[in-house]
Image (cartoon, rainbow, N blue to C red; front, side, top):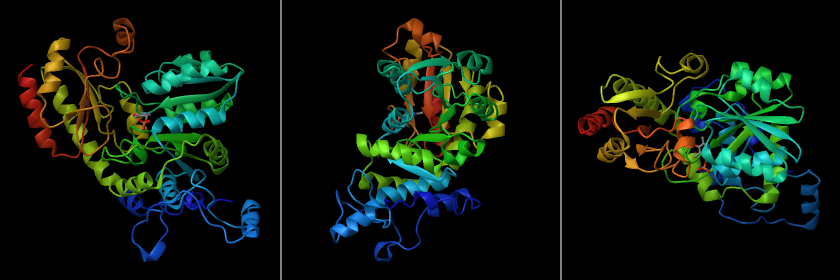
Length: 401
Ligand SMILES: *Cc1c(COP(=O)(O)O)cnc(C)c1O
């Protein structure tokens, strides 16, 4: 038996988002009467006697054993993540990708098949292709296309993997439709909810089996750490933990501490980012130098109705196409003065990216255009700066287009 607080984290789901961000999953009584969670910077743990170790192994005594199997600060972060996502249990990993890859390797074996929604994170798609090496095949289907899903299912299909909202077109997976479909076909559903955060949606409430986050983004929230998480029912999460204990994709106490600290302001940050992104999306949609805006909070977005039904807020990422060619678009991106030109999203600092140059430069033009990554596409991750300043910055940069 390991000492994990994550299993008892469901206590106070009825409290508000900010109360949950601050207190969710936390023990009131902490080491040395500390208000905040201490950092247990240790690689291993002491047993008083061999019989104590035996009792621990027999599940009669709670104890930490070795750093790869667990750590009190990491457990505290896991407990908080479970509380926020309305989960029985959660696990922390060294990055979003180590969460995704560990979960999939733990759940699947050779001869099985998975379905992945198009428009998922590039490296996730790449990993699904890599799984072919181990005899696990995958099929890609357009987001929320039930007919395509129906066609893709095989007797050996085990897992349906979707992201919601997606990057960079902000497609929203229709969980009300996908989950019953998956149940009918006995598939497990894994949702990457990084772009939504537990503040904007809790996919587990819809009957999804597992939720993953890249905590590097909104949960950490300060562009200063890398971590990933998975949460769901205790049974399946504990099977994934056994696998994590072997492969060593665990996080470390310093990162876990930074994550707990970052999450304290999650609800506050998301409120600001949701509101600013909506304002910016509307501003851009009305601007004559902008051709098209992708934001689920706009009535013009194809998934607006689903997003409205399923989400409490529409997130902090806005993608849009400049009315101009590749060169004009690049000039516009470089003319912005407040955002940093950097990959990633979800932090306090606004970040901007030109996907055709940055994340998709390895694709041929034809493949890139086939998935909607046009030369004019810009991805903008709204930070927590004053929205009026961000808009004034758009004014000056768009004037130059
Ligand atoms: C960033 C990201 C990942 C990968 O997470 P890392 O922490 O960078 O490993 C996975 N999914 C989505 C949606 C992401 O945005």
